[in-house]
Amino acid sequence: MEPNSNNNNNTQQQVTNQWGTKAWHLLSKLRTQSPLIQCITNFVSMDLMANTLLSAGASPAMLHSLQELPDFTPHAHSLCINIGTLTAAWLPAMKAAAELCSRLGKPWVLDPVAVSASGFRMKACLELMELGPTVIRGNGSEIIALSTAVASSSSSSSAQPTKGVDSVHESTDAVEAAKLLAQKTGSIVAVSGATDIVTDGNQVVGAHNGVALMQKITATGCSVTALVAAFVAVDKSHALEATVSALAVFGVAGELGMKMAKGPASLRMHLIDALHGLDEAALQSYVNITSLS
Image 1: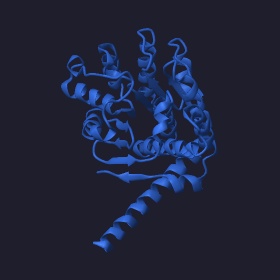
Image 2: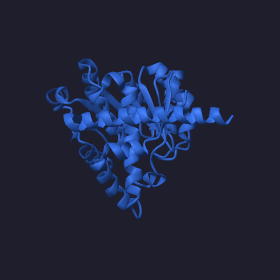
Image 3: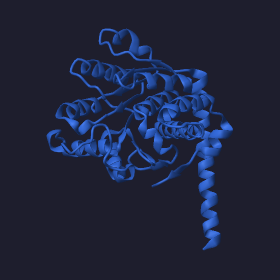
Image 4: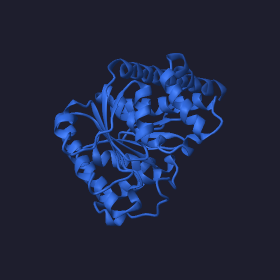
């Protein structure tokens, strides 16, 4: 038993090292290329999302005017759509930008914030998913609700109890739902939690980085979605690997920031600093990614 255990540990360490190398390669590309990331997002998250993208090396654009999209969106390298403060006035711009990205072959990422809170949100997300998001990232409850709705092809049948934007499910509770959603939509599906789950409908990968206090900072989930959009922008052809890498990098930045933080407010500041200063040695040392399939 002991030799087998050692072999398993060695194999896992090799996998982790490989993921660390991938994550550093993509972060380096991001810093070199500085892709333009268009964000149509909620009022609460704009500041932290923009600063997360800037600290990672990307160029954020918080642009949501329907009139500007034809001129601007074709120049963006990827798009992040977040429905946190969804309104009927913003939805046409979200759809138009997503349709434009899909038509031009540009990646885009959907964050279905509190999707089960209302029929309006669910209907909006189902319509957006028809436009082919590259990645869908949500918490356990959001992914379960979306998967249920897609499987039943009815927004009305998917109404479930919700707790605002917070998840009442662990990410690990949503693995099968995430796989089904990925299979139905063709998107990479990411589920945030103590362990971040990423799947293409077949392969399932877990990113185990981060600290619990990050949940006490509003918009950290929104911000990591934007970071996923940035990573996918530099390697669309490997969207699963890009998504896992983005989640791990953000989690590692949280762990490093926690070493200097005294609470949520200082963690927010130190997380941004840590992401900006993250180097290869630290990333390789802290990254913790495993295969779950």
